[in-house]
Image (cartoon, rainbow, N blue to C red; front, side, top):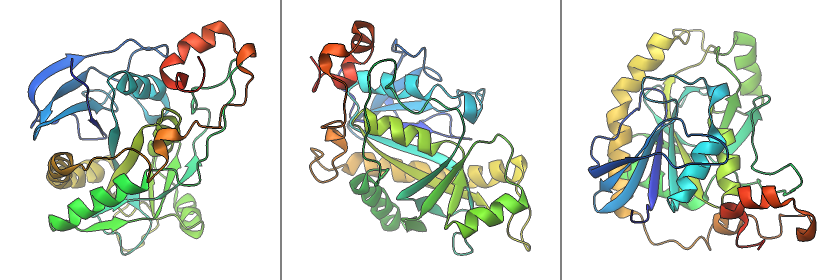
Length: 289
């Protein structure tokens, strides 16, 4: 199979990318088990592109139970260079109205107990995470949306909560006081793992509601989220189609994503357990032989 350049991870309500041609389904073996679902690989506007439904087709997997390490590792085996993560979020700001698109540049981690690193078990690494998503890919996605006439916000803070319940009103107010702009349940774990895997990653957030803080708006419910997401999914797919077709050549020099592990691995190579070295060979091979 030819190298895949771009991958799309679809969130709630986004379970297929119908525009793919010459489709085949793959499910790479990973040291972390199977990915969320089969990965659909095809051609989108001349570019080899993969699509993975984050929660599985039919939405079977809770945010806390996502096999994120398997998902990221599987995409790494396909040679993916860019990943667009699409997710439904609640808005924490008046100016980010439902149906708007947000491409955040900062993340706050409020999850608990999710595996958020490939490392451990005798192999230690500490990546830089001050810029948690790829700035170049983020700007490109936002610019594509604006050119299409889609209301998009570039930058802002995405608060990633554990879930699966939505926020209480008190939590929603706290998240606003922290400077949060949107709230979701998945992006931060993916961002950490993609950075360790040295893959450019940006998250494209679809605002579906005002969480629970807005006194004059309907409180968030599954029905409201899915209806607004359904209405907005056409815009998301339009951005993806156009972004994939116009994705510029990029060697990672401008963002640093492709060299995130340079200097980050602290363990003496002679002390790394052989089993761990084999497990992560795909990720660490540039630095540890």
